[in-house]
Length: 238
Image: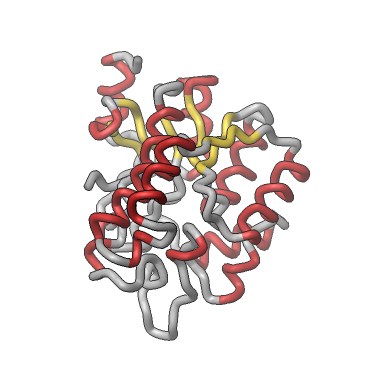
């Protein structure tokens, strides 16, 4: 578990003005193998992977395979694995829980109610995330303040009280989408081709669509729900 000294240092905000690379270097030096990136292979995440492996080629990266991802997501996952010689820890939902949910509520239950959608996210994403986080003292994400109102105040380094008081690092918190894509393309990092097709935010295939001109960054996620519901429970507790 993270020491009180490290927690105090994190909460002091000393790293808030640091670059993403500096935040990541601090994390790797402080936590070693007890820190990992939670990657969905978004543009943000592949940018962080590029930075991480430059600091430590053995840095830990895990992903949540919900069983409903786009083929394009699997494609970029393999490209990243090959280019960076990276071992990706893939977390799957528990098969018996998925089977029971589908038997009782159907394959496309998430379209019928927010309760159903949260149940599906809980089984396919939140529970596997919790298993992964049980192996770390700190985790890294690609959250950016610009993405959605629920993330507007996210800090680069903070205590994650929703996950047992471990440290949560968001090294790209103050980056824009333009900065992110410029970094990815400028460093020739493989990225999800759906980003070029109007998908700035990509989740499960049946729950993600391209955004329309003038829509916000996450308008394509669970588009049938009210805007304030657009979180799955990974970063904002339901």
